[in-house]
Image (cartoon, rainbow, N blue to C red; front, top):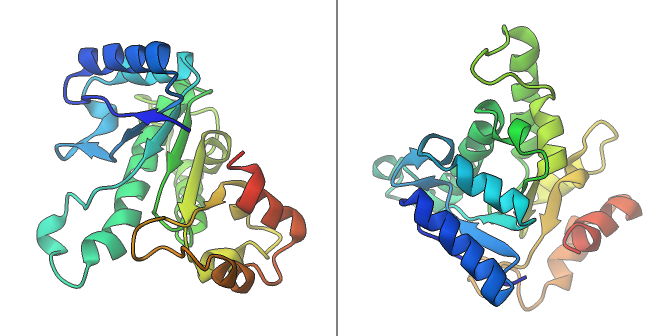
Length: 219
């Protein structure tokens, strides 16, 4: 899928560039980070940008770049190991609880290189908070967070044995939102011997779930 990038720090220019790339070059997606200069995507005046993405039926490919908690994650490759899932969880949380997925029901967001083992826990915990706490009048939600995620989001992984084990559980709908990718050409990816980890990860996973995660969701 051809994708463009846009200057999110200038919302009006971002909308104009998105339209230009879509109309002149046939771009079908836009790649962005999980924040802009450490500020949440839902709180820097990007409402028109998200509306235009939805209108043009483009995909948002969201790739974390490090983390806003960089000072605490300087060592041990923590910016990737912990930072990527953390940044993705924050981004999906703000999209849900700030009402962006409520107002833009046809928006499609793919969270890349974030792994998936954390996703069921995070969404279930958010569902519980919605059920137990008083409704937030600033962003009324008609669905549970997990329902928004299933409708609007996807999460990619390269090699996540915890995640694929959870796909075997009847109560876990991780197979509805997970998408496998090789992460080529990054060194932590599984290319070129992708069949080895795939065969190992998906052993025992129901055939229909495997079909969705490896092929159907990406298509």
